[in-house]
Image (cartoon, rainbow, N blue to C red):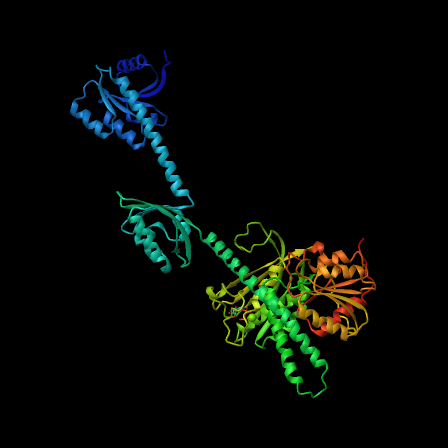
Amino acid sequence: MESPKPLRVLIVEDVEADVLLLVRELRKNGFDPDYRRIETSQDMREALREPWDLILSDFTLPRFNGVEALKILKAHELDIPFIVVSGTIGENVAVSMMREGAHDYFLKGRLSRLAPAIERELREAKERHARREAEKQRDRLFNLALDMFCVAGFDGYFKQLNPAWEQALGWNIEELLSKPFIEWVHPEDVASTEHALQQLLEGQIVKNFRNRYRCKDDSYRWISWNSFPLMKERSVFAVARDVTEQKSLEDQLRQSQKMEAVGQLAGGVAHDFNNQLTVISGYTELLMHGLTDGDPTHSPLEAIRQACQRARSLTEQLLAFSRKQMLRPEVLNLNTVLTSMNDPLNRMVSERVDVAVITDGALRNVKVDRRQFEQAIFNMVINARDAMPAGGKVTLETANVRVENGDARLALDLTAGPYVIVIVRDTGEGMLPEVREQIFEPFFTTKEQGKGTGLGLSMVYGFIRQSGGAIRVESRPGRGTQFTLYFPATDEPAEIIGKPAAPPPHAGDETILVVEDDESVRQWIVRVLREAGYTVLETANAREAMPLGREYAGRIDLMIADVIMPGMTGPELAEHLLPIRNDMRVLFISGYTQVAALDGAMMPEDAAFLGKPFSHDELLQEIRILLDASVKTIEP
Ligand code: ADP
Ligand code: MG
């Protein structure tokens, strides 16, 4: 036999004998009642502070009655099965008590059905309780969820919204319920939203639909929706999520892919163009060298030379943008560099513009190309000046910062670590968002024809990216512009920047091996070298250069090699030849630094570079510096 079921029973009854009767009936039916008898409303209130499984109540007592007892129970908002057990109750009264909320009734003389009724009531009470708990959980989910839940009617109004809406948009729920929801949708998204609604009205589920909702502060948030219609209720149930952050990361990725593609194109064009420029400007200089003063061909040749120089600076900026320029990074303290630029910058801007440098005393060092850094700062200060026709202030400020992993707010695509930032801030006219999105693209300019090339910020962008950093811009029309440049910090000590030595004499009689695959560039170099007195060995590629380098009977003082050549790169060639000719110096020439190809490990430590195009003088000067440098040490 099963052990008796414990049952806490509150019995509203004045006659003790009737109570015992009830208790016996319960015991007989497998219950183990723990009971208390009460007979006043006062007793009832006190008793309800404790938990009860069941209330059995007489209908009339001297000082209390069943109806009162039921009222007190309701007032306590307790869901305890309430069964009337009376000797006198008539059908009418019983029915009206049931209506008041009693669960069942019995006459004292006929208790045979009491036990099954109690079983049933206990079970149902338990089910009600479970249901209420589940509802409570659902409400909690609804109220606490960060996602936005909504029920909207086919009439175009929201019916029910959870509090997440208030947090996301800033409106309170009543405001959102008061107008057709389409009124909050961004004008550009109304058509697509109406289309999505049409699908829902036709009974289709709509997944991952995105539109913009207007916030209380007039900004817009991107919302992504998963919605399904309930045709019978003429309603749409939806879960929505604020994806503004995610959207902006996606846009940024798309933008950087576009920049990548444009960069590849620009870099490729600039590379081939540079080779041609080397030839044009080289031969022009050569021709000019042989001229007497007052020769009529002098001025047209000078015009060609100058055009070449302008073309050269354009291609340099394009190469910088495509991150394929030759960088000569040195360890610098940007405070020193910026302070030394203060005067030239102030001279460059008009009298109405003031340039101020604010330096962080404990600034860490960075490893960047000084010349390119200065060029970048000049470009940005010129832009700031142009944005302040009526005058204003440009502030250059430095600071140490740490970029943390997942610094989504910055979305700069930087590895975590210490950085040095340079902030360039102006009080100029600022930019519209659609301008701001395009400023780093090559040839994007808002300046009139002849005033801007649209390459200034492209150069800045490429240079910073190639240096392992990033650039961020904040700007509002009429509110000025702020650029933040990030450079990776280094613990290496800064180099002391000395004045460049006086240019050495150009000529020489040493032996030089020239390895260059571009026919006309090679011919020009060979001719310049021979005219300057050098003995020149020439080859078109590394395959030819290898045996020549190995077997040439005399001494080879210098090898000039292109970096990127079919078959074998210049650095690879040097790696093969240097062990055999360890007193040979090497000069790499290239207009095209494929960073990957210039794997640092393969590059001879003291190799020198000359970026194409270079002038006659620059070539001869670089050669003399190399040949005259003190004895070179070779690592075993
Ligand atoms: P350019 O100066 O030749 O136009 P840039 O690449 O230097 O080319 O700049 C591109 C565009 O970015 C400018 O035409 C201008 O519209 C905008 N811009 C750049 N810097 C600023 C600034 N500080 N304030 C306002 N607009 C700027
Ligand atoms: Mg500019």
